[in-house]
Image (tube, helix red, strand yellow):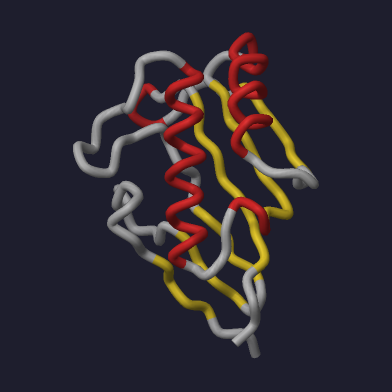
Length: 130
């Protein structure tokens, strides 16, 4: 039976409810959706979608590193957008920060995101078993 291990780091915003920043199960780590919040202030790092996407990916990276993984170990990413018209700006940031080979990815426009965010990003990545 695979055990589940909660992952937590102060380098990313604390969970805002009854969930973990990430869960490690075997050789995979599953992150919670990350907003573009500055972990030090709890406020959005930027008003624009590109700035929020950059901070959200930075938050993912911090959580993945705490789990013994990183952006270079991503296998699946899901991007949630408040406005589908923001996709080109998010895609540019993503292409700049996420290393090749790019993971599988889905993107959706949703009605609303928590705290009025413009973008939320969640991911699955590999981690060394052990």
